[in-house]
Length: 114
Length: 112
Image 1 (cartoon, each protein chain N blue to C red):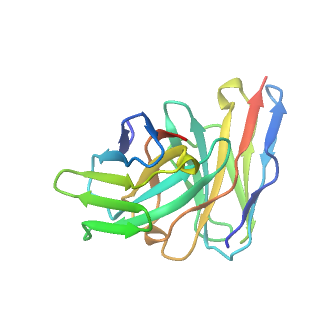
Image 2: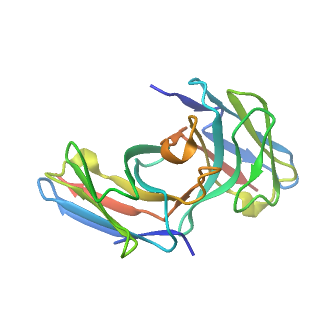
């Protein structure tokens, strides 16, 4: 089974801090995604990557950046955390031709910014 | 607004009953997928239906797709307490990037 591991289940950070959310997948998937999930807004795509060192903006990239130095690892960076970035963050991966491949999700990181 | 919108927002049934959830979307799609999310966990893929398919089965799950109405339904037959979860539909429009767009989900409660 594909395993997508997010490094933290819960994080509490202060406004203005730089925050790193890490995600690792073990199935050699080409594509990796970061979503945030908020009540009433569903899942919204922040950034995605279809290859090492490649990245594409999703629907809500403002305030975030990403890094993909190795195929198995996709990091989400909050340059200066703000309270409106309090959310559940979900990492996902998929193989090859992404549009016909299901997403495999990690268990999420619940981030609170105070 | 979301590309995929589920209906109803919440559904409560007794164990053994069938549960039907609906999803509507706005633009032409390549495929539509259904996912389940247990409380506090990530999403788990259930089933994918391509735009040229009308119906698909997987165990107790039956998914239909009506591209003329831009809608899909997920039927769970003979529900169990363990089916209690949120269910999301996701559509893929952009085949180059394979981005999936999710709705806000239907919360299903199955009472034992």
